[in-house]
Length: 152
Image (cartoon, rainbow, N blue to C red; front, side):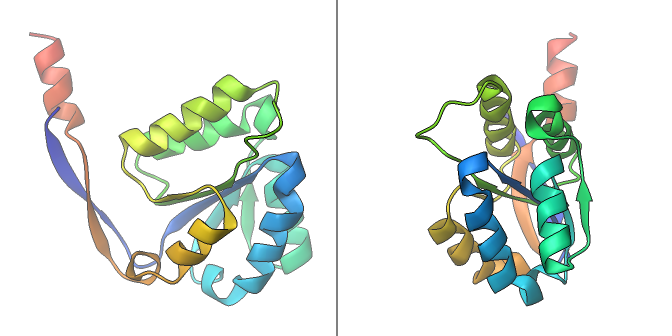
């Protein structure tokens, strides 16, 4: 695979997602990092996004609930280059009926090389890093070249 670059602006588009058993943990993390998050565009899956918006006052665009397609909506935004950071408090100990969607979301974040935090420790490291506040350049797949080679 060939790569190109994408610039993530200082004001990021951040997706916030949490499984049911970790919604309170993500909510508390958002409260602790409200000032830092307030400088960015936020979206989240339905229940999580609405909970964060109601409890913190942060402006969060709520997608559909994860099981109803919200994970896929965020995955599509990642593929379109419209999400810069994914903060997904993922619960590896409890199975969810939409597990294939969860795996697809994490796969897309990896394919498009965006920073991902799947737990509080990583989210803390990310929010304290230069990536969170500065314009940065990341390598991403050169999709145009990939497509051109596939249709030859």
